[in-house]
Length: 404
Image 1 (cartoon, rainbow, N blue to C red):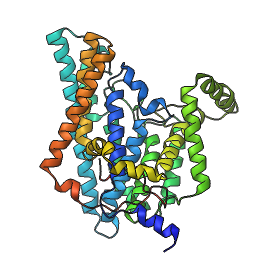
Image 2 (cartoon, helix red, strand yellow):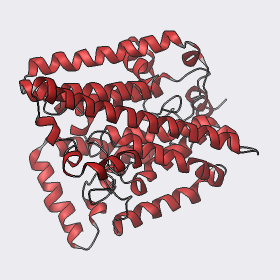
Image 3 (cartoon, rainbow, N blue to C red):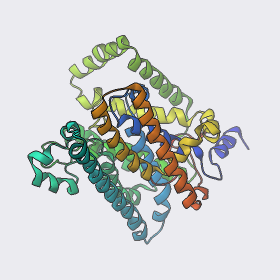
Image 4 (cartoon, rainbow, N blue to C red):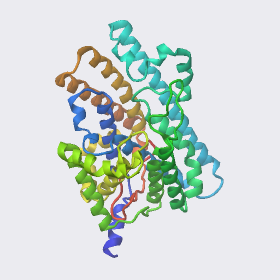
């Protein structure tokens, strides 16, 4: 066996790849901290060290999860059972989104009614309930009105709805679909295409027409992993380029003078040449090119480092892999806990000590939830899953082990 073949064999473990759950757990922790804004601890999450943040990681890993979980059912007809399974997952996401939205509103209403904490009622896109109550009540179940910090599940379920078509068209030949996805992303940025809001003007915070691109890359990476091949083979030059970008961006984000130089001397002149904003700036709604490239570069680098696998298999990463095994319930409960924390912070103000107590308490609750889920359905964590690389024939990628 050649050294390249040996590396490929090492990338395809016979059991569950802990790297997948570790990165999902890490993204969930970052989201939990970021969704309780105003703490000093949000300065240490991933968004402070790169153009992209946990949202890009979440969507990329969701695509990989969908490819891993659902692609085998689209190898031969009939395809309807596979379609039904994916749409059933989308229905679950819809119900979870509506439930957590209602719980968030109840938390803020209770804070105002019982404790006189009214500030949250003017945040998180809640005020239209008072200014346009009937229209907002219509918009909430239609997903045309989304509360702040409750935007990502609507995006995910919309992407799942189109997943059967993507798999049917591109499972054997993914690159035409990926190129089409790039075209849709560019058209959405160029012409400001988005799904509409109601009753407020504008479009979705996470524009599905733009964010579908990173999901599609993840989806066909998951398909490739399932088949023990690489969507993009490992290449030393590509790895070096990706690593350089990741390192430079860290310094860009942490050194004010370098960030100013990059914006004023690099990006601004490019913009003045006529390049559209989604090519040169950092807009999250349109998944601007710097965010997209950074997310993919980071995924490529992490998937190429053998030490990542050793860390994921060790005791240090065990809490993260525990959270990552139960992505949806952890995300849902964490979102509700964040609203409780926001209400408490509105009453007591910012305090590094109390913020630490609340955040650690919330993470412990999420760990306890995950532990209970592990024990209630042990078969879900013991089923073997063959993993293959996202963009690298030498190492398995950052992904999730099943649909989140």
